[in-house]
Length: 159
Image 1 (cartoon, rainbow, N blue to C red):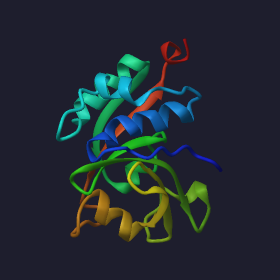
Image 2: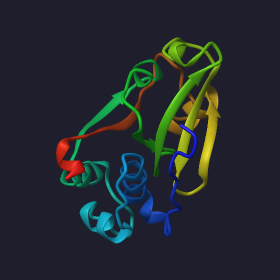
Image 3: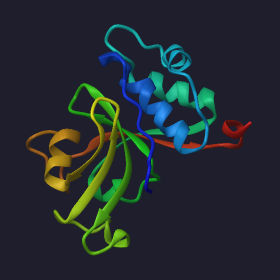
Image 4: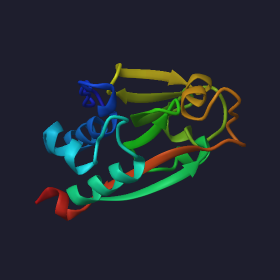
């Protein structure tokens, strides 16, 4: 996945619509941020995950908001949008394991999480760092869950 898209959010409130822009670009469509702001009802505090999900569905994605642990996350379709550090949204686009990409479902701190962060750029995290930002400081692989928005393009997206 060399060259996964990343766009910089122009304002702190724009992380949600910028994540949609990143995912749309990954699937081959370039969308304007003003349109995405409008669709995701972005206001002073940003966008809610529900508004981002509704906007994505209007664009032609099938969406599902979920709470899950890293074991289930490794089985989820990527890219997806994650609720990050309690006040931000990022795109998770790949998970690898030192034992190989197909063993990413196993537990352990040998995983690398690939993030397209509208505030930072393309960045990677080990599992400890990832859990801290996704779930919180006291997170463990098995007991804690984070929030994700799973997206899948439908034929409507490509029209």
